[in-house]
Structures are given as C-alpha cells and as structure tokens.
Image (cartoon, rainbow, N blue to C red; front, top):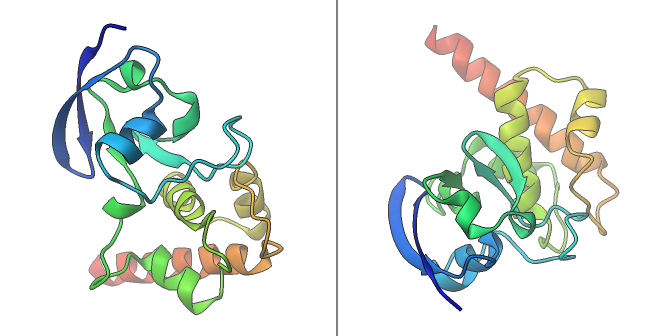
Length: 163
C-alpha cells in the first residue's frame, strides 16, 4: 500500500511522517510518535479514551484518518502538563479523585480542557452534557464532574487575578 507524507503539529512540535491513507490518527500518535496518553478503547468511537484536540476541537482519534489530520494542530494529554507542572485539570482530577484505573483519564481531561475553553464557567449539567461522549467504567462520574468544576473555578480565579 502506498504511503503519504503527513505533517502534524503535535503538542506544539512539528512532526513529519509517512502514513498509509487509511491509517488512523490514534495509531499514528501511539505507534509512530510514541504518545501513549490517548488510549485505544472500543475502536467504535463510543468510549472517548482516544480523545485529542485537533485544530481546536475535540475529536476521537480512532475515527480520524491520519490523512485527514495532515497539517493539523493536535494536542494530547502529554501537551497539557508535565510531571513537574500539572495542568489545573490534571491537578483537580488528582485532588478530587476523578480517576480510578486511569484508562479513560487522558481522554476525559483532554475533552474537559476543550469544554472549559468553550465554556469557562459551566454548570454541573453543562459539564455532564459536554462530557457525555467519554465513558468511565470505574468512577460513577460524580468526582469527574466535581474535578472539572473545581478546575473551572481555579482557572477563572487565576484569570480574574491577572486582569
């Protein structure tokens, strides 16, 4: 099968690679670029474990061909924080016990990041609706919602203090 030259900006770094036309973005991220944050969960787009940001939108990387992402800006969980400096959402998930096994957590946090970009001060109902495409089999969601609301409050406090 022929391969295509693909250029992606992943977590702020331009990456060039060869990909098969029908190769999925999730496989490129994990297998070719070594980013193991986005997980392969259901392969049907139902679970959201593979959620990444692409050009400012949440996408499920198991539903996007690498060819469709050519030229795109991609942000994964690895691009949101570091072990030495967690993103506000990562810290909130930690403090509010928004994770158990951790399998869904990268997709949850990446989706929550985009949700808070789109709606910086969501209600509990808006968080639940906005996160509906990401499934967790462990937590019961209450602590995930609590973590997202706490992160929103923290981000808004920091923003107000800067103004």
